[in-house]
Image (cartoon, rainbow, N blue to C red; front, side, top):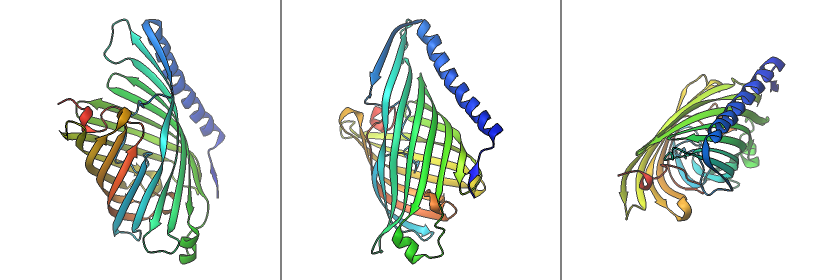
Length: 304
């Protein structure tokens, strides 16, 4: 049965979204009134919100080999997607602050694929997601307001081999608010999300927090080590804690882009929509490319 937000709740959600947008625009306008200089850049090369490296939902081009210590899924994970910053507006005040106030609007789109290592037609599940983020940057802090759509689809061969599988539709729309702090060699983030439309019906709320710590820099500061963690508690699985850990090396390419080789560990529930109730424990090795890096992502950008 499809779940819809009741009209009063929908109106409250829309009012809250409008209030957050109004606060962001009002803050920008107040700062602009005393600003000495403003600058608008279309399709900037960087993004304001930092990379959440350990978050399995973070957009990237990636390839991973995963072995399951718990759960039935063993094979390859592929990510095809990227955030695309569309416009970034900056204000530099007369006080000549080290970092100006900035607003950024963007577009995110991508897919995540789970491939069975031993199947003739190996696609098990494909998740697709698109989002519209609005970011606000002030000093070491970044805030994000994001509206997104997500859907999940089982592969034909998986359905043939698992006739008991639930082949119903899985799609949902959400609004999320996140905040991040970048300082020195550390970045932290936390926030929450609410599904204002969901099919099948499930609990709507969720919280998320995590961070990244940069380690020693190598190879003339172009190669750096790092460790990252992401934690989630989702109402749809009774607020059981999902743990995602990642550690590896990051290689800086042109224009600040970010290529990483890392080990991953996951303990909790599957990040794929059709399997969201399954308990898993995965170990994996992967290669990740983030076309738009920001802030501290790899350790070579941290202060010594």
